[in-house]
Image 1 (tube, rainbow, N blue to C red):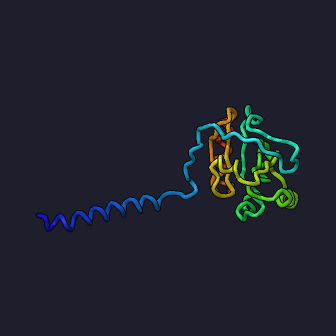
Image 2 (cartoon, rainbow, N blue to C red; image 1 turned 90 degrees about the horizontal axis):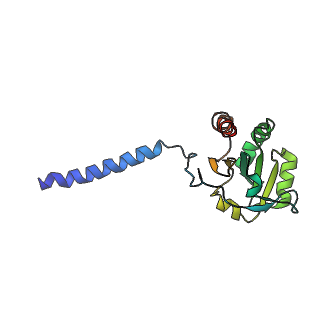
Image 3 (cartoon, rainbow, N blue to C red; image 1 turned 60 degrees about the horizontal axis):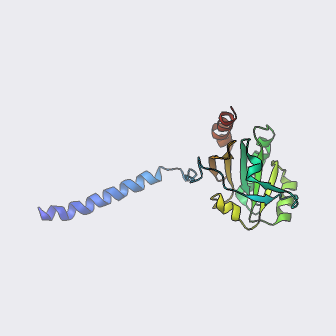
Length: 177
């Protein structure tokens, strides 16, 4: 009997590990759960990218559903989503705020003047500290925040027409309803 156990135990361990691997391969890497979902958005107070004399704080956003789009002029994927974001901003479904992440102020302003500016305002996070508070580990990332300041959605990577149509627009309508 011991002889069979020598073969069965490693077989069961292998099958268990193979099962975990197979399950992991079916997951969407863009759907990384965020610890911020259904929690209050982090506090922040940052100057506007285009005007360092104006500071915008989390408290200024209370009472409205809004989008925070984390971007940088050096980010290739941000360029991919930017035209879509500019087009989406025209429907005025919600205010869109940018978080210019680990960038240079002039580079960010030049980028927006060349490619279009979809943002009601873009906040300047040169050292990335506010981005870290939001759990950003790459750009672009997009968040939807409700009227009470609670994060309701996080998109990792570039926005797509499908994500806007199937996830963000219905969520914003529900939160505004």
